[in-house]
Image 1: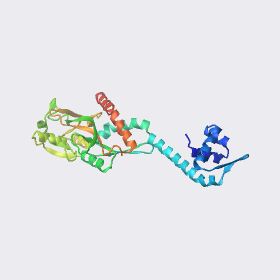
Image 2: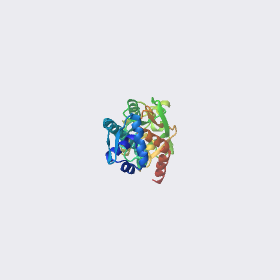
Image 3: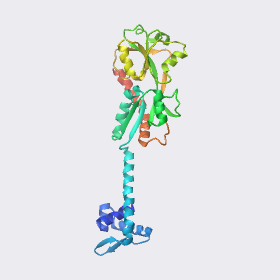
Image 4: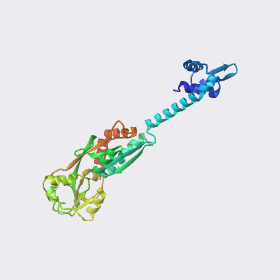
Length: 300
């Protein structure tokens, strides 16, 4: 609905009450009453109503630039509100693990952008320690973290990601139904670099087992490639295998090392609207997206 300042500007612009009313979709009476109310508010006559037309009074000329400025600001505000509602031009910055960027975010983004096509989503891939640092210094709006071991004060748990043993099909342990950490400790191990605290290494430490660590690698898919080349075996999170075709053996680990994946943020109230919308969207759809990945994995 147009404001009284907008109505006034339109009347002056077309030079006629009736024509302005028609263009605005109001009755002439409503337009006239609005102008009279504005004149009463200003304490002076703003429009000189003549038989053959209208024109601004001297007082009206004094007020007119201010009315135009107010009307222009109202239009800008209305446009911004429209943009914010549709999140047009908004940029959402997220910190995520590689398993998230491969198996969770593509589907999340595809669904979210059906409603908000103009949103730009910027994903920074990293390990747990880096992502927490990015959340703390505001480099990302929110990020995926391990809520079982976090310094982040604000988070919401999403799902549990258990670690599995992965090895070539020809490996000595490939015939076993499940393996123990002690089994794995006797073979060259390629460990995922998780930052300051490794869930896999912590699991070995709790059992007082010293593994044979051959490599420590940042990227999950580099580890898979190294296993294919016979450079060792590994312990990796189950989510990384979802929907992945590979000639490797995946085994349950009797000790069940795992992490609770959560969404963490610095301050919910000051987080950009678009980011809050997407975070809420993730909360609402995470179970469905994971279920889709499970079904895909079964199909493969």
